[in-house]
Image 1 (cartoon, rainbow, N blue to C red):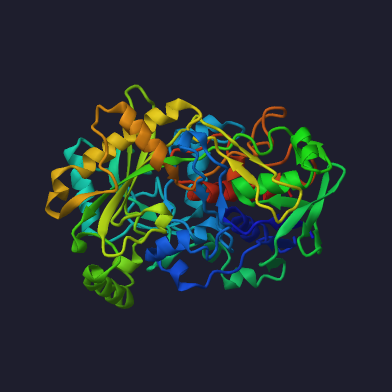
Image 2: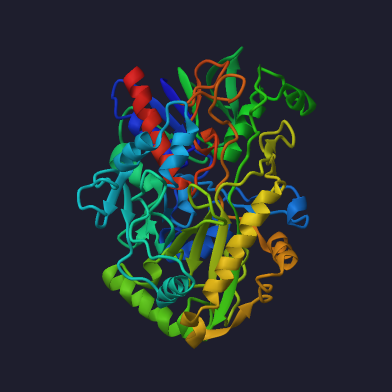
Length: 531
């Protein structure tokens, strides 16, 4: 075997598809989850089910977080072919191109844009009509919604009332980082009314039928097989082995460092304490954990004005089903996270550090709380460039035990200031006149007065949650500084590479799924050119 890939998430699907394009090499992809056939995961509007029903989720949670009133924060991660793209909100965003300039190690905004376009099959108008910002021939279908919920238009109107510009194309960015400040539609990874997960984009039936590609699902990896510091393949939980010339870890920012440490690659003292024999002392493994923390405000509305559960919402649900059956559009084709926006928490920043997600529904507790009989809207404000960093550590040497996830949210109080600023902006938007005709009242307690800094800080600590973007736990960097080089090759090991969000040295200023696909495209192309 030439390549064995651990993890069939977004990066793993891209790597399997691209590497197996060369018929002279053999590739095996190993994924712990299954192929997702549940209709709740295929319908975009099934997002609340995908987030809380544990249909294709590892069901992780953090250790108690002192910065968040001691709460354990649920951390959904996809356990299915397609990984988190099988359960996420289908939001297509790239961050700022300046983010990739900051990475170094062979990465840049120009390189990132090249590979974003290579991966993308965009269905929508280019900002300049000439394909400067979007690709139209890549596997990953990206759509701009033709119809949106009326509540999302109220969000745009409320944002305009409070001084936020309308942005038509968030990918069109000036060299000074300008162009993204304001609100507008999310592009989304949907395909004619269905979720466009990365496995369906990159591993359709004709690709999976390649004779040089084997896709094994329902097979959890126990650890990497090591001969000294050389990786020789994977051992699965059932005891079987898959040996290969090169092992590629694509298990994500939580799974990849967990797997490395189970294999004896990580901070030596921690490994010994957990009962793992050290193969390679790599202090950076499992460190540098970064995530986007998010605070949401929710406004209750009259039943017909937003999405909800209960008799009052039945007419719009029936209309949505009719629209979807006839035209593959409407409510059921919506990913719910229709509106987005970017803002700066203070003057002098070179790029926005706050992101908004607007949903025409009450998105409480990751969608687990149904609020039967109530309708409303949610506006999330996210800290895009957190200074707080945490760790992934072993709970034990047993591969079946979940790792210890400690993002150390708000351990740097600069992040608290950004979230307070974002929360104030969100409260102002939801208080705008555009919502007055449908307003019932705040869901949960009303937000504090804008000048009540202590009240806002307490609200953030009590309500903030992850918005599902962990990165950085096997970061690229020079030897002694990072875990891997810029192409994911692990320092000090042979035949071992990391390709997923754990490779990011610094989190990007936006949703992370599209950047992971882009990274895998670039690294796979580099591997093929070097072969």
